[in-house]
Length: 601
Figure 1 (cartoon, rainbow, N blue to C red):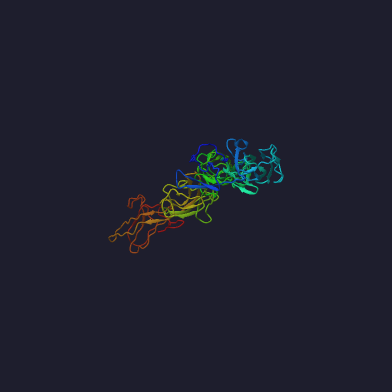
Figure 2 (cartoon, rainbow, N blue to C red):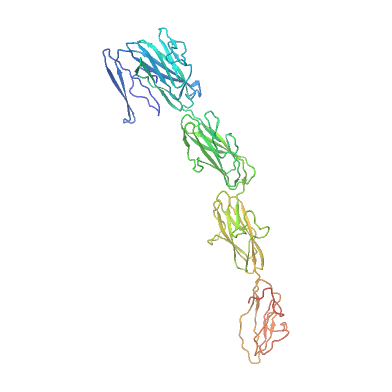
């Protein structure tokens, strides 16, 4: 790309060119000695893969008897001069050569060349030289001040404007003479990978002549990436203006520390900053390697919004651009609670284009708390919130019922853990023999587990307690427990069922009998205690005998016959009638029946 043919072999096609690659061609035209005027040459480039892809260029050749000067520009980079010695990159020195040749029939007087450097090139002060003199050219004097003279009395005035412009003025370039001016520039840190092109212009005695060829230097791809608690500057220092919002250690140390406590099965969020330090856009992939997190911990990355999962690569990121990602570590639900931790994981980011990588550390120093579940009563004032199975040693709710009559305790299971969970339902203490328990959902379905309860949600349940049919009066504790089948965490609550005292005496239903005048009829009756309280004192009376006389006898031996073992009452009711012996009774014949509540029937 220096404007000079490198081979005498004509060509009609280029070799295969990679995307962005250049191929320079030189057209040589022979002009007859009698030629006048001007002529044009049109060059067409067509894709051999797709002949419809075309590009054309038209060159004009003018025949002149005056001065003619050809200007050829070249740029040659030295990879070893800076940066990576194996590639052309930022910091490398580029030698720029401006070669002029006077090929006309007349001398080129007041020959001037101007060169505006690309912004990715920085002029090296004091580097300009003229091939006709060993004296360095002065950057600081004026553009018309002579810097040096050659052996033929021709002078050069060189000027650098302390920015991107250089120019020189040669008093005269004789016909057939040539020379060159060289200077150096450095590829700037801001130079992206790709081609840097440059063209110089020329004029003779104020008249513009054709510009030089397009010279170029190719900056190779240079890859570097970073992952840290901050963005990273091009010089490798931390850029705290772009930093992790979750880092608790307040130090730009390439470690993202999270010190907040977390529950079993909970998530730990740690934000990292990725930076593309390459000289071309690049996409970065992420990986995590567990160091000390508990076995079973899962990891995933989400984007800068903290929600969107990172699928594939992050980017592409522009040169020097940064992006935030968050590592979410989810602890196992059955991890043992602990007050002291020092869990670490290594985060790796890798360049898609080159494979270069960088690492950073995620560190967790908070405590692992037991996952929280709360079983409470759905009774205002007696809920039993938190880890309080009893109300200071007493049951929270007491309900009274009769033997065999169910009682319902309305309850609520609250999942206060960080993840969805389910809880088994049971009694922590067994009920007396003959008693039953049934757990129900609000729709009446019988269950032994709450089903899945989302984090922060709750599930209503019922504990239906049914005493035995013959349950004695008194208080019975109902100790209901819930336990997570995942984390093993649980809660209890203690309520109470009071069985009422039931006094229930039953005598056989009405009977009828026939007797002859003066005869005796035995009418058998059975008295039973169908309550749950022993009757220790009672009375049996009869009334309504007007035309008959009769008495009540106790059939102690239960044979249904009045015999010597049957006891007679101390007095007989008046009137005529039949004898009425009685069947066995829980109490002897005596004073009126008494009890704390009296008989119900």
